[in-house]
Length: 126
Image (cartoon, rainbow, N blue to C red; front, side):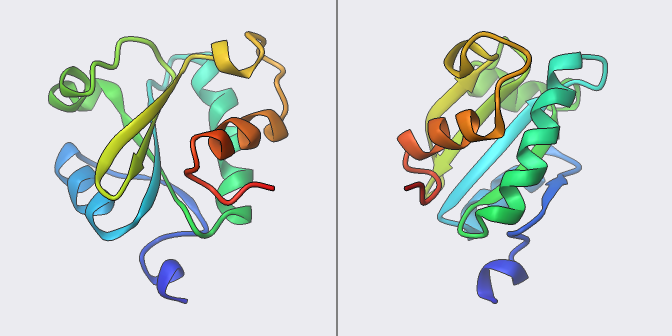
């Protein structure tokens, strides 16, 4: 219940960079998708993250428009979209950049992404 009250269990967009800091402060595990509307691969990533957010309520799943967050993109050195920033205890621990770790294909499975997030210990994966 506490997780759900903090916005876990759903994949949602945050409006600004300032919101990012607030969101990562209040949750132990956060996956943040830096995306651009016109990037097709970001839409593919959205589809998978929507499924995983419902399944892994122990982790908060967010998305942030990279074009509206230049400061954060520079600070986190985000150059490729989509990029997932994996944040644990308020610190960015790992990144999933593009689809390289996911088999370098557009039709990777949700399970592949789930496995990769599990490797980073950002979700409880067995």
